[in-house]
Amino acid sequence: MDANTVELNRRRLLQSLGGTLGILGLAACGTVTTPAPAAEEQEAMAPKEEEKAPEPAEITVVDFFIGPFAGRNQEGFDRLRAGFHEKNPNIEINLIVAGSGNYQENIRIFVAAGAASDVVHMSGPHLNYAVDGNLVNLDDYAKADAGFDIEDYYPRVTDYYRVPEGGLWCLPWNYATEGLYYNKQHFAEAGVEEPDETWNWDDVTEAARKLTKDANNDGEPEAWGVEFRLARLDHVLRSFGGGFLTEENTKSVVTEPGSIAALQYLADLMLKDRVHPYPTLGWRDGISQGMGSMAFLPEWAAVRLAGVEGLDFEIGLMPQGPEGRVTFFIPGGAGMFSNTDAADSAWEVLKWFCNSDGGEWALAREVAFVSGSPTAHIAANEYFWNTHLQRPANRHVFLQNPDFAIVPFSHSWDGVSFQGAAQELLPKIWEGTTSVEEVARELDALWLARLQETGRG
Image 1 (spheres, rainbow, N blue to C red):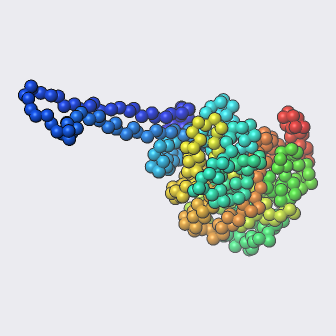
Image 2: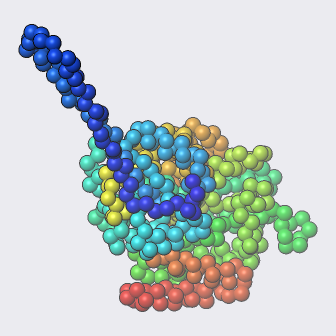
Image 3: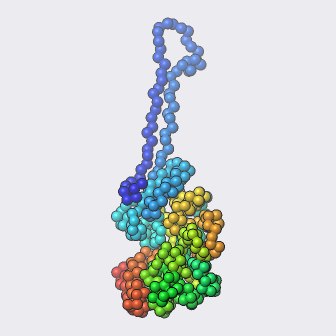
C-alpha cells in the first residue's frame, strides 16, 4: 500500500456476473415405433430447465481516510483488516492514508477539495466539521444497534464528541492524558521524597532544585530537575485558574491573573531557578536517558519507558494548583462523512476501528500503542494495562485521569490558528526577551482579530 498514491475511488460495488448454464436436452433418435411411455416416464424424460448458480454477494467498499500512522504500521493494519473482512465478507476497507505532516491540515485540505470518503479518523477537532454538516449524527445508529453500548466508552471522551449538542459526531477511539513521571533512583540519591497526592507546583520547584545536577557549575546540568512539553500547557494554566481560550472559544483569557501566574511559574523554572532545559531535551534525550528527573508525559511514555533497560521510574498524579489538579485530554475518534453512500457498512467499520466489536484486543493494541494512546473503550484499555504492562506499579493512575481532564485550546478547531501563534510567541518568554505580560497581550490581540475575521468579535 503506497500511502501517498492511494486513489480516491468513490463507490466500488463489485457487481456479480450472473449466468446460466446451457440447457441440456435429450435428442430423439431413429424412427422405430415404440409404445408411448407412461406419464411418469414422459415427465422424467422431459428437458429440464437448469437451475441458475447463486450470484456472488455484493461487496461494499468503505473508503477510510486515516492518519499517517496507518502507513507506518501497515502490517498490523493488514492483519486487522483481514480479521474484519473474515467476519464481514461483504465489506472491504480501503484505507486512504494521509501523507506526513500536520494531519489536521490534511483533513482540512481533504474536505475543502471536495474529496470523498465514508469514514474519517479525526484524532482531535471535529467541531467545525459537525457544524458545517460534514459529519453524520451517529446517535441513531448507536441506539438501533442491539450489540452496541456507548456506555462502554469513557464518558469524558464520549462527551467531547457530543459537542455541538444534539448529536454523537464521532465514536471515541483513543485518548491521552498527562501524568508526572519521575526517576526513582534520582529521588533516592537526592534524598527527595517521592511525589504523592498532596504535591503542588511549589513542591515540584523545590524537588527540581535538589534534583538538578551541575557539577562544574557551568549552567549546563548533567541532569535537569523537571521538564514540561511546552506545546501542551493549557492544563497548567487552568490549574492556576487561567487558560488560553474559554471552552467556547469566544474569548481569550490569557491575560487573566491565573494565566499570567502560570506562565511566570514556567518562566521562573527556566530563567530563575535554572532547573528546566530550554530548548527542551524531549523525553528520548531527557528522562529516558537519565538527563531528566521529572517529566510530564502521556500514557504512551509508560509503555515505552518500561522497555528502557535500567530506568527505574514511577508515575504520579498531576500536582495541585490553586484551582485543583488538572491534566490535559487529547481525544481521538472516527466519524462518518455525510456524503457517504454506504452508511450501514461505514457504521460497521467505525465499530471495528473503535474496538467495540469485542475483537482481537491484542492486535488492536499492537497498532494503537505504536502511535501512542490507549483505547477509549474501557474494557480494552484495562485489558491492556492489566495484561501487557506490569510496570511501573502506579501506572493505574492514568485510569483516574479522565475524571479531571480538560481539552486543550489547541483541540478546538478555531483554536488551531491561536495554537500556532502561541507557539511562535511563547518562546520569547522562555528565552527571556519579552515579559509574560507583553506576550499575553499580543496573544489576546491576535485572538480578538481572529474573532473579528470570523464575524464574532
